[in-house]
Amino acid sequence: MEAIMIVKEIISFAISAQQEQKKAQLLKEIASELSRIHSLVENVGEVVKAIVNANEVNDQAAKIASSSSELTEGDFNSAHDYARDAAFRLMQEDVRVAGCATFLLAAGADVMALTKWSETDPNRKQLLKQHAAQYANHAAAMVPIVEGYTANRVKVETFVQGFVPKLRFKVDGAVVGTRIAVAANVEYYNGKATGERADLAAPLVHPLKTAAETWRAIAEERSPSYAPIFERCIVAGVEPPTPWALINGGRRIQFAVAACINNFSNIFSVVTDSVFNNIPYAASILNGAQVVHAPAKPAAFVTAEGSLAPVDNAKPISDNNSFIPAPIAGVEYDQIIQQKGLAGHMHVYPYFAN
Image 1 (tube, rainbow, N blue to C red):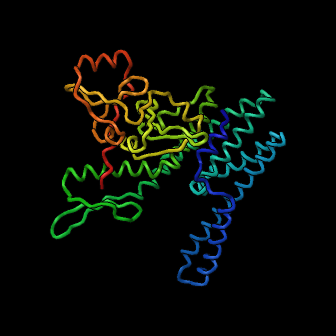
Image 2: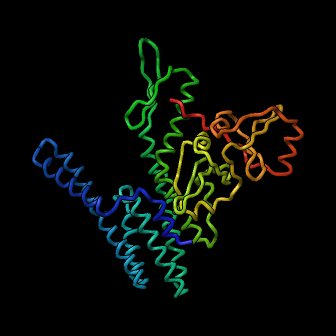
Image 3: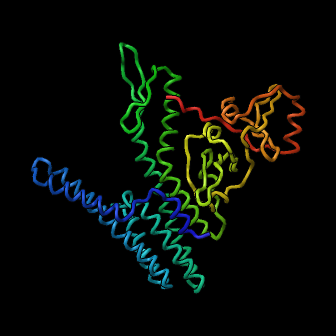
């Protein structure tokens, strides 16, 4: 498994150097116009700071390209130097947020260079482990920072309408739902806010966590374990395409029907084939899969392997083009589990409604 390939593929949202250059040019033009207005001096300062950060990230992106070129030429020392310098610069506080995605690419490039170098010179293995650990620590440390920024995008506000206290649920300043301010609705919106924040953060938090685990595994000379990162999330690979899978209890439950699996999570992440296959397989639920239930026992999909996957709501069953038949005896239900196993209890995500 090549660490750089994992990091490159999981950062599908990374901004290209050309796009960054256009952004920097636009910011320069804005700064030029604002500089003519003396009353906006403080705002100009903020814009200029953004320009500096954008240009700094551009410079480090160029070093990543140089590292890749040197690696192709077989100059592992130079490839390491370019990538290391870029990664270390992007770890600094003034650019660590703006350059977060580029840091992942730079660190991944350095780990790749050092991996190739240590294959020809075993004395470089300790250097590989040292840098992998540093990069893992930084990636992990960035997670709460990113989550903190994301938290501010979701708000639950109170207001009064016609003497009636109400709640307002907002995402990025837009109102997406309102409810009467009673205890049950307060609890619901607080739970929904937690889920929305996790969903908004996932496009960067999941790559950070995945990279951190990849690099820490290299530093500790062990196999990575990605399942905990994606617990209760939906994942899929794209090269090659894989079935959509719910990570449930640390294992993959694969689905044939998108409308069915979408009931179980509000978070969808595209992952590499290596990450997808690293997560242990549990079972597959086919379109129109048989369902069984018994008195005092939940309805359960019968998976392609014959194991049971119980659900706590009838909607996924309907969405899968399945149906709930007449009940079977409890002892028969238990025998299926004893003989074929339990794929895992699946819980419908409770905060879809606004």
